Structure formats: C-alpha cells, structure tokens
Figure 1: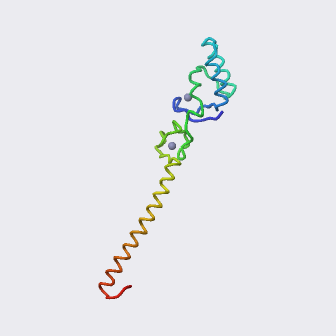
Figure 2 (figure 1 turned 120 degrees about the horizontal axis):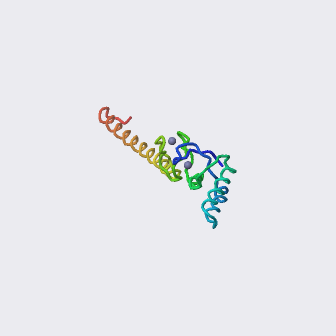
Figure 3 (figure 1 turned 90 degrees about the horizontal axis):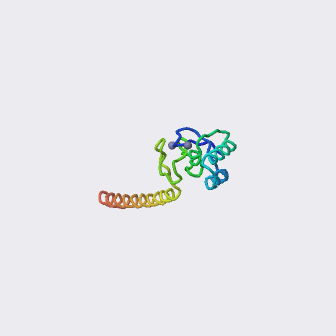
Length: 136
Ligand SMILES: [Zn+2]
Ligand SMILES: [Zn+2]
C-alpha cells in the first residue's frame, strides 16, 4: 500500500500494490452476489489501507501500477507510465531512450563546433595572409 494522488478522486488515496490488488481482484471473478463482493472487497481494502470504502468499483483504480512514476517536478504520479509530460504541472518527462539521443546530439553539436572553429581559423589565416603577406 502506498498513498498516492488519485486523478479520478482528485485527492491522495491509498493505492494497492500488485500483491494486494491480486487478492482483491479475486473477488471480482468469484461467483458471489454483487452485494457480497462489494462487502468483501471493501473490507479487504480497509484491511490493507485502513481506509473504509463503500464502492468496490472505485477500489479497482487504486492500483499503483496503473499510474506512472512521480513527477520529478511536483511529485504527483504521472497519469500513465508512458506519459510524456505531467498533467499537473506540465513538466516534460525525459525518457531514458530520448536522453540517449540528446547525448548523441550533444556529441554531434560538439563535432559541428570543432568543424566551424576549424573553418573560422582557416578563413582567418587566409585573411591574415592576404593583409600581411605571411602566415600567422
Ligand atoms: Zn481514486
Ligand atoms: Zn508535475
């Protein structure tokens, strides 16, 4: 169990880890009346979280794995694990594979800069030679 911001409830809610969720999910497949299911799910949820619930349907979305990791900027969980930005603060999420690309770009930029400097030096040398009649 972990207390996380729930986007649907718009408040901090106790969320279930996979083990707890699996136990609760068993009731959804059991051949019992919906009243009985509601009662069992809610009592188990209370056992795990200490929070009383009245509607078992709401409990099923209180599952940690449904949400992404916390936003590095505001700390609220991302709506999904594949979110590319935070729905709360708009913070851009840098994915690990994208980060690698950025590194490559930096290497390319560095090579480009060296190239420009070399050309600039060459042009400078040409101009210098033109005006002075000798190489720098
Ligand atoms: Zn919720
Ligand atoms: Zn955020």
